Length: 497
Image (cartoon, rainbow, N blue to C red):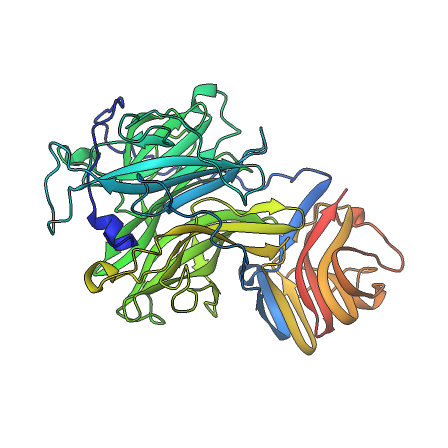
């Protein structure tokens, strides 16, 4: 067996499981309007403004700033060690529950076993493997344990941690959320998993499940229109669910999005990423994840290049969770490792949000030592897919930087009042002006000349003006923030009560 993502696609089939299956088609919510995104963050923060490219208007000697994710020296933090993990630890979600504070890892894997009713497809290797979902947990996110659940295959694998199995050609990318908006305790956890059914084509796609504890899963009967490599996300500010789906535009893997307010009725898909004039015939968008940072919705997008057979991760952003954009420079924030390393074949996105630990975010991802074509060219069975993570400093993933003396200004926003704090790095002086929208210039008393300059390296430095320490006089008005400085790197601002 060649433990690669493509091999995982080609190893297909599952032992039938006691799941309440329902043959229900997608229900479309035609004309559904997006839920409002303006919901004040907690802890006294009235509003955050991330200085991402989509939030910026005017610039002078200013450029986008991106911080590549730093791979942990402890990688890989969990590897395939059990006989039921012969396919490696593939596509998965690492959560940290706010309820019990445990790190929880839901991942897919496979092991040999021909099951009745599974037909072969494409080549002889399909239909010879059980594709299962497993669960592991950790107190620190570094040392992982597999609880002995014995829910499935307990006679074949005593003490196993398998939590989901379903007869199929192929199951893929279990994407899990813990839904703190949910009032029904039996639906606290939600999962989307791609399923390719051997008997019922109506069950092919992104299948939705619910669970009270993340261990006992019930199929809801909803199937979203997707190929493999899909992911589920919930905006915690609104409670709305978003499913990122895969289809093809021509021969290229591309991305779609649907949304729902009740996890039952979903919108119709719309394209969000397809190859454009800056791409080439071998550009493919494999999977993606989403999260909020500094009041903005960001995400990680997986790109797969047919010409190199490798994958990497780009940063993406959205102002409304429905319309997405890639960054203008399309930087590789998480790239494949050196030849022979645990992720030399590809860094595939983790399907959950980055996790804040202290002042540092951890982003857990799926690392493959084999290139995508290893199923055909031969891979390295000694290095199976594994769990790894990379980090970035709190609220310091994307921002703006000036070269020499420069400045930038944000899109107009409604001033919430309160005090203003800046997240920045600069050895010189930095000033902040409050501008009127359009051609209005600066508000009186809040001009750059009125600002008391700040300097240094701070995640949270208060900005004051000579005659004002708060912005309450501008509350409810449209404003723009203008940051000026020499060789300044600025990431975000926050209004606090």
